[in-house]
Image (tube, rainbow, N blue to C red; front, top):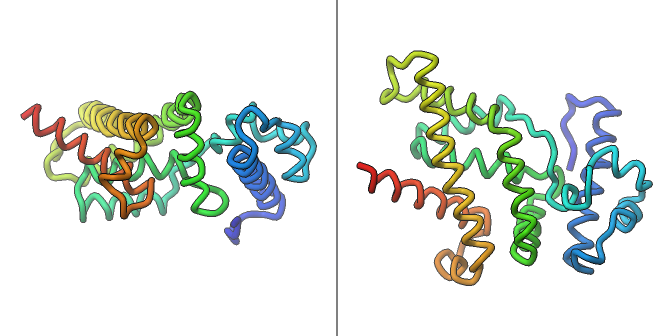
Length: 219
């Protein structure tokens, strides 16, 4: 739910409308199927006009996946710094990537529903991964902050740190993409490996594992 007290009434209403559209899109796809889900149907369920729909999304796929501009907040960065200190750089970066890719405006379980939709309709994966590209600059800046606090990167100048951040982000981002594609292609096998975890947690664990495997083999 949208409860941030720092938001003005107009901003809250816009976020609430966007959230209703996202919820309606996901609900309809799971209930009626992708082909039967239209912009008109989404708008009707969200109680807005199709014209209003296009003020928020450029297509029904964008609404289904919740694609939008996402800002890495101070709170998200602080949490990532704490995670890096506790669990390591790879864990923190993978978690941050998945967090910004799937940060919901509505109920937290909508992320699980979206993953089920991607499993049923793998071609939607391209749009979800495109969101990662859209926020790559913000993610790179966040990773640079992490590297500046990591003793292994002490003494690096700004240019070298930026290059290192790009490489770390590319490796972790590639592992996330591989984990999502693996899950979408063979969800049953992945569930069997992590049958006690949520989908997002399984993906995070798998992406971290893949990253570490690559780093170990490159030594």
